[in-house]
Length: 172
Image: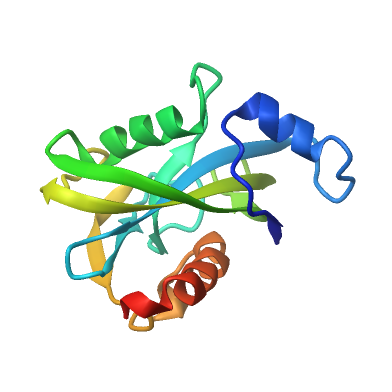
């Protein structure tokens, strides 16, 4: 479900925006996500590994959970990029896209989890993506808009991919 299209910079701003929203559980987690485009305008997806909490073996974007120690969402995203792809890739965060809300099933804790996704567009400027968390990432796959098999995407990625495909359709 789409939440908002105006960027919020941190948890404090997010809480203020959501304070009167009764549709969203108060027990949500926040994840920062980036659609990274390479120089050929292909989206870089990662194949989720067996150590992921949900939607194992599905394609997902780079990103992850915001921690209490994160100053703001962009610093959280920079941390996640480094944790997931290593330090040899220069990934630039270019712009905020959207915020959405979704519910997934957490296999580790055997329960449903509500997520708010803070989504950005970025580009791989140079370097190589490494598999820095092999238990969580089996590898990287690159697809032009319209060329990925949407059945291979995680449930959270499906909605986001549709939004990004519409917004950046000119990059086909």
